[in-house]
Image (cartoon, rainbow, N blue to C red; front, side, top):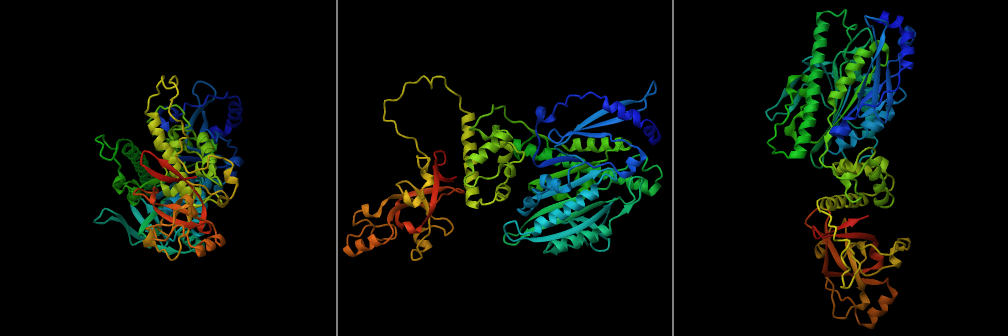
Length: 617
């Protein structure tokens, strides 16, 4: 076959140049739904190898563009009735990386989000898959280094204990690569949890320790020569990073997996019985892995749309059929009820000699894609976040995320409005904190604003529009400004320091006087809010605040002291409500606050549905 391809290489190039551009295949996303943000399938096309160029094999894999994520493969077919012809096929993935893309760019686009996800208690998994010699180990080795740098650079909030285990799976046998390839057992305990009996788990505290473990494991990795690669991976290498939070005893998991390389027919032509059995075991484990990934994604989508008690038949997830998926039971077992994010990188050889394996790799990648079904047919509406495209979402983030604005490119690089709403709070906050100058209080208020708009948007979407509303005559009753926020009606007011424009109804944060004590006010130290009512001098002499102090003393001594001190205001206390991030204004619990005690203006918005106030940005 190689001889046929080399003899017709010039004809192949001429035929490829003469191909007319074919229309893009109709996107599965446009028919069935949108890409699943928890399951990202990508493809990386590596450059041509020097030996392929010297041998004369031309390029046969052509990425259309990274935006469409469509790959064309043009194969040369030896037609029995005439001269050779071109047979073309195309495949679509979620993300596409061409031969000019660096591993660092792939990390930022795909893997960087898995690290904080696992840091905050999730299960993140990265698979690299493809033909032997396609660059799987090259890719995952560099990604492991970048993960180590991210984990150990101190950029994440909170203290964590990082534990590492690196094992090797060859068929149904497992070995500890950090312990001189000592055999271990993959067992389930009485609670159904998979245990790596005999494997060492290493507590690592800096990047150098992580890299030393990876290098030691690599030296014990099982390899064998093939036609394409003198050191082809003949086993699955699994790097498990367990991230434990000592304060809550919770933990997150991050798996970095370099799957064994698949082989073309010419690679296995000279294999003996042992190598043929090894190849069958690899193919079987990859097939089971595909079924498990698809089954878990379909299970999650069905549970989210129908509820956990739905009577609709759930897909079967055969994670016990192979040692690889048995080790990853945490990822696939529906009973864990832990959210998972999975990234697959299919590595592609672009040479004409490898079109068969490249097609198989991309076909396997396509089988892993599961789209999120479209559950609504709403027209785009600026008041309904679930209808927003990525462009509309980015524009809204820029205008509504406070000062400084959260970077929309970091918070929502590709997500639509509906997909952003599905992000867990920890991941939402982690992304926002990557924007310099953004505080955690601002992020919580911004997320609360988004969800308030989402809840109101559901009400709007379900309310029919009456044609008589526009024609109704104006009411003869007194028309007043409908205000649900403490924000000043003058848009230019924010340019003046808030202490110079204090007004009734302004909400402020303030620091509590030491002599008052927490028990007196019933408020936490972390957040103290109040709404200004009037100057303290406006109160009568008999009025006392919640601490029992006279609001406006009539004595000449106190009056003289008031003139020398900062202005004082009678304020209503704001206390936490019974739901998260909700507040109540206690008009009958009043306290006198000096201007010097006030820290900054806070915007409170009233929600009629819950009858609570929420911090806005």
